[in-house]
Amino acid sequence: MSNAERCHCIAATFRSPFLILLLLAAPLAAQDQVVLQTEGTSSRLTMPCQIVDYTGERITVQFKSGAAQKTYPAEQVIEVRTAWLESHELGRRLLTERKFDEATRALQAALVAEKRAWVRREILSSLIRCSMRVGDRASAGTRFLQLLESDPTTRQFGLIPLVWAAESVSGSAKSQAREWLKQDSDAARLLGASLLLADATAGDTAAQELQALQRSTDERVRQLAQAQSWRLKLRALEIGDLELNRWDARIHEMPAKLRGGPSYLLGRGWAMRREHDRAATTLLWTALMDDGDARLAARAGVEAAESLKRLGQPDDARRLLQEIAARFPDTEFGEAAK
Image (cartoon, rainbow, N blue to C red; front, side, top):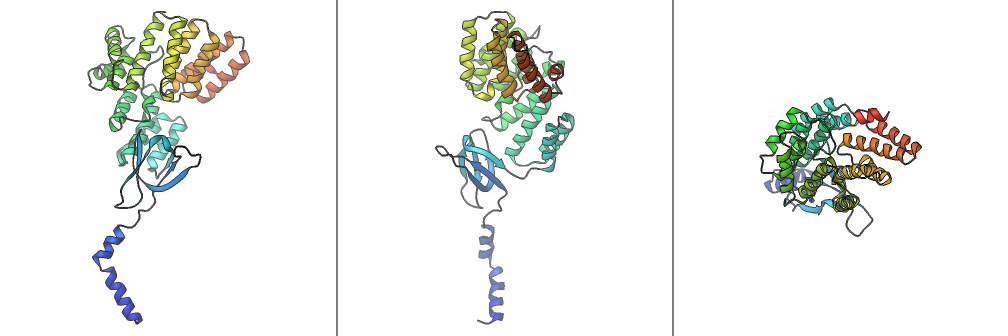
C-alpha cells in the first residue's frame, strides 16, 4: 500500500462513527486517587479513578467510561486525593490559620461552585467547624442538618453542635432550636433539645424530648440523647460513683468520634466527687482527642489542669495549659490558659 493509500485509509477511519464511539469509551483521565487498606492486609493500594460518591458507608469509584462502578467499605479508605476548587483550598487554609470569617466566605463560595456531592459534604464539614469556632450554633446546626440530609451515614456525625458545658445560648440559636424541635428529623430535635435544656421556659420540654429520643431508631441519636440527659443529673448533684461508672461503660460503647461531649460530662462528674485522678484522665481525652468542638476541648483542658493541680502535679498542669493556649488561642479558655 502506498503512502497516499495509507493516508486515505487513516482519514477514512477517523471519519468512522465506530471509531468515535471507541474513543469516547477510552479510559477516563485519572482525576482522583483513592488509597485503600483492605481487611486482613497491612499493604495499601493506591487506585487512580474517578470518585463517584463517598459516604459514611462506602466509596464508589469508576475506572473508565461505561464500566460498572465499584464500591469499597468506607472503613478501608485511608485517603482520597482529588482536585479541589481554589476557593475550597483557600477556605481550608484560612480555617487552619484561624481566620474564620474569611474562611467562611471562601467556603461558601466553594459550596456554590462545587458540583460533586461528596465534595460539597466536605465543604459543609469545614463550614460547621468555622461556625463552632465563632460560637454560631444556629449556623453550625443548620449546616450539620444539610450534611446529614445529603448523607445520613455521614462520617462527620461527631460534628453535631450539641451543648455540653454551661454556657449562654444566643437568642437566635434558641429561636432556631424551637423550630428544630418541631421537625421530623431525630437529629434536628436532638439539636433543639440540647440548646434549650437549660432554658427557663423551654427546659422541661427539652428534657422530655431527650427522654423520647433515647428510643430513636438512630443509635447515634439514642446514645447522645442519653448522654445529654446527664447534664440534668450533674446540675441536680444526683451522681455517685456507681452512676459515673455506668456513664463510663456507656461512653466506651460509643464510636470514638461521639465521645468528646459525654467524656466531658463524666470528667465533670469525677471532679465533683473529688476523684481528680479520674477527672483529669477523662477530661484530657476530650481536650486531646476531640477536635469537633474546639471551645469544649479548650475548656476540658483547663479543667483537667485544675484537677492535676489538686493532685499535686503543678508542672504537668502548667505544660497542659501551655498546650491549650497554643492550640486554642482564639477561645476564651485558650486565652485563660495563658
